[in-house]
Length: 217
Ligand code: E4P
Image (cartoon, rainbow, N blue to C red):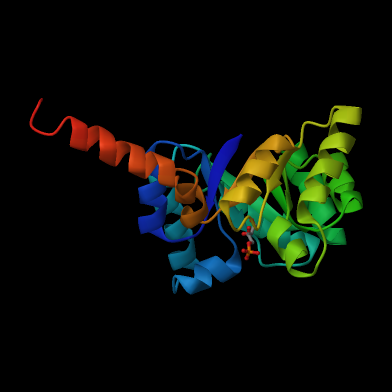
């Protein structure tokens, strides 16, 4: 399973990259705003900076909600770097834009997906990635992981190439469950990724090994 980090914070992206397990980055307008990135040139430069840190795909979201605007923005973003994946919301014009981009060889990430039907449409339009929001479904008492399972089944039934990008991942158990369910990618915060390495028996075991070998090396 590929690991993407869900942030626009350059320090965190660098930290995850240095760990050696990072396969890409997802951003969204809220994450960009959180870093104080505003204005077209600053936004474009920030995406360039992210692409310079990571080796893999970097999702950059369009703001327009109508086809023409999405195409203009998406083409501008895609021209920044071959790593850029144009992130498009699951709305009517978004589906049209995904189809357009896929025919032009521009990678896409269909975002704000909350149902199997939406995921099916994204695959039919030729999306590179589909982003079901696991955590936000959990937030409204709906099983987000169940959606990953459903989409996996549907995509495997028909051999769709669209990769399932489990998004809105909040903690290590989400990551483990997504891996069990065969999600192609997960995107989450650095805290969820680093939490995977923690186990009290690792800490106590290491402490004892070091104590037993103290002064003997
Ligand atoms: C998807 O790519 C989104 O950026 C993200 O995963 C949303 O996560 P949140 O629900 O924690 O905001």
